[in-house]
Structure formats: structure tokens, C-alpha cells
Amino acid sequence: MYPKINMIQINVLDPDKSAKFYIEVLGFQLDKSKSIPGVPVLKSNQNICIILYLAIEKNLRNYPRDTGPLIVFEVEDIAKTKQEWEAKGVEFLPNQWAEPTTGIALCPFGQYVAFKDLDGNIHEVLQPHPVKEQE
Image (cartoon, rainbow, N blue to C red; front, side):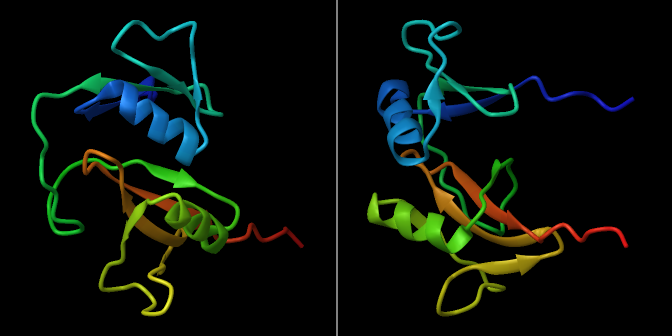
């Protein structure tokens, strides 16, 4: 049996400021039943808590060349999401496989593009390939 993911911790320099980013820009909700002062907990639609935990220093990432985990957020329309988030100040990071005009790349799972949060944590958004119906 595979281990089950219980929660995701994102280390940030200012948990309250980061909570505002994840809520107002990315659309998550605060889970008041699990949050404690200084440690906001966000709700995901898969019942996996996202904890914003205080870090002391910023780690500079060199996406996609360095190691380190990232979270892949699934969206229905990647172009629309990218446009909306860019309007809210989100910095996207196209890679060498990206389409030059959109910055969106293709992989076996679908279309994706990376972005940075306020503290330089790198995540990706993914629009999965459409599910083919069985004949």
C-alpha cells in the first residue's frame, strides 16, 4: 500500500501575508478550525490541509534545474487562469519546453506552467488532457 498524503507544508517568510496571497489570488479558503495564531491552514478540495509555516530565510530556486518539491494545482482552463493570476501580479516561469507566445508547456499529463509565490516557492498549474470516453 502506498503512503497517503496527509498535509502539505509551505515554508514562507510571512504566514499572514502568504495566506492573503493563497486566498485572494489563488482562491483557497482559510480553515479556521485548524489554524492557530501564526500558522494559517488552508482548505483544499481534496481534504488535504495546506499549512503556511514560518521560515527564517528565503531559498532561491533555479526552476526547472534544481531539486525541491513543488505543488501542481489542477485547473480547468490554464490560459484563463494564467491571465487572471498575471493580472493579480503572479510571476510565471516558462521553461525551455514552453510555447513561446503563451509560456505554457505540454507534458504527458497535460498543459502546464510554473509560477512563484510571494516567497519564491515554485508551483505549477496543470490543465489535464481531456479524459477519453470508453467506446
